[in-house]
Image (cartoon, rainbow over the protein chains, first blue to last red):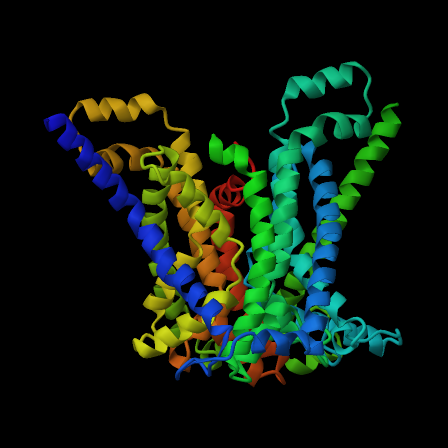
Length: 293
Length: 276
C-alpha cells in the first residue's frame, strides 16, 4: 500500500522534473509553429484577424521568381557547405591528430571565428575586408589589382556570403572531427602501423570507419544548418543585390517584417519547415541506435 | 627516411599555420586598426598604427552606449542560463533514466525542434510579445532564447546522467530520499561539471544571438550589446576607427571567457555529436 503510494509519488516527481523543459518548448516553439502553419492559409498583417484564403499564399509564392531564386540558393548553399568546410575541417583534424604540443593552440585559433557573434563577424568582414574604401579589398584595388567586393556583384555575392559563413564555421567541424578521431582505439592504429600501413591507409581503413557515425551525423547537421541559415546573409547583404543572395529564411523575414504580409511569410516558413522535416527524419534515423540505447 | 619525415612534418605545420592565418587575419586586422584614425585606416588597412591611442575606444563605448548594451546582454544571457540549465537538467535526467514512459517521445520531439526554422515560430511570438507588453523586455527574451536553445543542453545533460552508475541512485533511494532529494542532493552534484558545460554553451548562444534578440528587443534602450554594435555600425559607417574599436569591445570579452573556460566550451560543442 505505502509502496504503491511512494511509487506514484516518484512518478509525479519525474513528470514535474521534465515538465519545465517541455512546457517552455511547447509555448515558445510548438504552439507558435502550429499558429504559423494555420496563418499560412490566411491573409494576416500580424495583429488583426486572420482571413482564411486557402492555398492562395502557396500559389503566390510558387509564382514568385524570388521564391524560386531563394530555393535554388538554399540548395547551392547546402552543396557548398557539404564540400568546402567538411574538406577543410577534415584535413585540419587529420593533420592535428599527431601534433602533440601544438594541437590545443591550433584548435583555439580555429575556434575564434566560431565563438564570435555573427553580427560582429559580419561587421568585421563588411568593413575591414570587403569595404571598397577602407577594407583590404579597397587597398588591393588602389594598388592596381582588378578586384572588387564580392558582395557588390550579382554573380559573386552568394559566394562572398557563403565564404564568410564558412570562415566562421570550419573550425567547429575541425574540433568535432578531431574529438571523434581521438576516440579511435590506439591498438587498432598500432597494429596497422606494425603491418606497415602508410598514413593514407591508416586514415582510410582505421580512422575513417571509426569516425563514420560522427561524419554522418555532421552531414545531416550541416544540411539542417544550411537550410536554417539566416544571420550571415541578412547581415552581410540583406538578400541583395537584386535578391542574388536571397535564401528562404531571408525571404520569409522580409516578407513579414518589411512587406507585412505575415500570411505569405508563413507560407515560405512552412516550405522551409517541410525541408526541415525531411532533414529531421534523417537525423532521427541516424540517431536511432542512440535513442534506443 | 628520417629526412622525409622531417619534410612531412614541415608541410603539415605550414598547412596548419596557413589555416590559422585565415582564421585570425580579419580579427587581428580589427585589433590593429582599432588604434588608428579613420584617415590612417583608409590610407592603408594593413599598416601598423602611428601611435596607440585609446581615444577611439572611449568614443566607441560612449557613442555605442555599450554600457547599457552589456547590461541588457547580461540580463538576457543570465536569464537564459538559469532557465536553460534548470530545465535541461531536469528533462535530461528523466530521459537518461527512462523515468517515464514518454521519454523516447520527448527525446525525438527535441531532435525535431533542432530542425525547425526560427521563422516558423517568430511571427506569432512577436505578436504575443506585443500583446503581453513584453516587447523590449530582456528577461522575457532570455526565457524565449533558452526555450529555443533547449535541445543541445538536454542532449548534453542526458549523456552526463547516462554516465552515472545506477547503483548510486538506488542507494540513495534505499535511504528513503524522495525524487527531488535524489535529484538535487545526489545527481546534480555529480554532474556539476556538466552543468558548467551547459551554462557556458547557453551563455555563448544567447550572448551572440541575433534574430530573436533583434525582433523581440525593439526600442534602443533595450538592445543587447550585439544589437547596439550593429546600430553603431549603421550610424557611424563613415568612421572606421569607431567601428573597429567597437568590434574589439565586442570581441575581447567573448575571447577572454572562451580562453578561460575552453575545456567546457569544447566539451559542450563535441558532446552533442561525438559519443564519449
